[in-house]
Each structure stands twice: as structure tokens, then as C-alpha cells.
Amino acid sequence: MFIVSTEKGDFNFYTIDDVLNFAYSAAHENNEIWIRSEQANQYMAVCINGEYAAINYFENDTGDMWLSYNDENREKVTFIAAGEEWEPDVSAVISLKNAFTCIMEFCTALEKPYCIKWQNL
Image 1 (tube, rainbow, N blue to C red):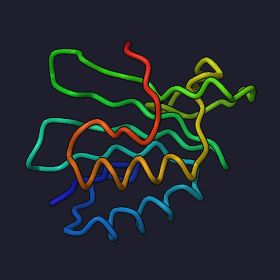
Image 2 (cartoon, rainbow, N blue to C red):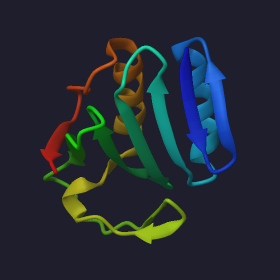
Image 3 (cartoon, rainbow, N blue to C red):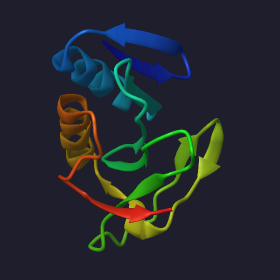
Image 4 (cartoon, rainbow, N blue to C red):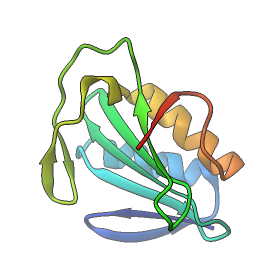
């Protein structure tokens, strides 16, 4: 089972397709989406603004985390994270399409996705 959290609460899903469908609908609201599996301790926080996203990946509870990395982006984007405006370095901004590929890979493998580059924080 996957748990997807937004500012509206926690939602349980049993398939990757259901997680992706929910994430697609939440993306239209420019939400911050937290995704985890009840089988693993890893989390992904996906911040969305229009056609852009930034992803934080938390490998464990001891502070090992990564931020999406895209050395080709030049666009400054502001996201809402934990109810506050957050403008990461432009190198953290990826396309929304790549974010959904990342969500799918995370839900499939239950580990840090390799479909995008990461920067260790």
C-alpha cells in the first residue's frame, strides 16, 4: 500500500496507477505531494508548480536526503513547501513529466529513482 499525503490529508492507494492518477489531479492544484510505501522507510516529496517540479528524496530517518538535479534548467520557479514559498536553486527544477517518471520508478522499486540526477543534501 502507498500513502500519498497532501495538505488535504493522507490517502491510501494499492496500485501505482492509482498513485499516478491522484498525483496528476493534485498537480493541477500546484500541491506538494508526499509519497511513501508502508513497506519502506523512504519518502519522496514532490513540489509542483505548473510544468515544473522539484523532488526531495529521504532515504531514512537519519537525515540522508537528496534533491532533484537538472543542470540544463535556467528557469527560476517558486514552489509551496510546508505551506511556505520555496525557491530552490534553478538546478533543482525538473520537468513535471520527469517528476511523474520519478514517481513511477519510486513506487515500482521503493528506492531512490535513477531516471533523474540527484544532489546530496
